[in-house]
Length: 132
Image 1 (cartoon, one colour):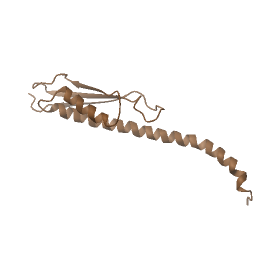
Image 2 (cartoon, rainbow, N blue to C red):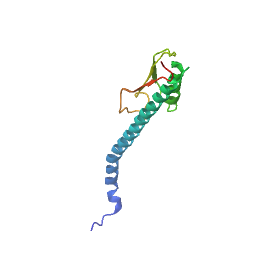
Image 3 (cartoon, rainbow, N blue to C red):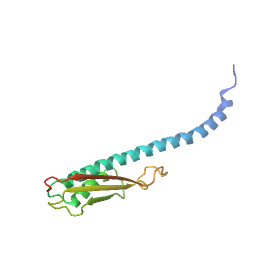
């Protein structure tokens, strides 16, 4: 049996703590960042769908679709969202409407370390109601 006093091991505990804690924090922040990217990705999917649904209704404009997408993306607090509606002018003869959303990952992170770079891009094309 080891009959050492507990005070003799206090240095070993501190060394183990100093080695393990940075690795633990790295995993914690990486998991946090993965969740944030997943949340942005799913919100972009929802925003592009809602914007296309808005644009396919007779009488809707490209501005209405952009506003619908921007409103959904702003609920996350992301910045630099680029919404493109094609065609730019929607009239009665427009058959299909395409909405594309690009969200830059840099600048939309909770943690200062960026594990991801580039943009999340989502695109959806819908046939307009009442199109000829």
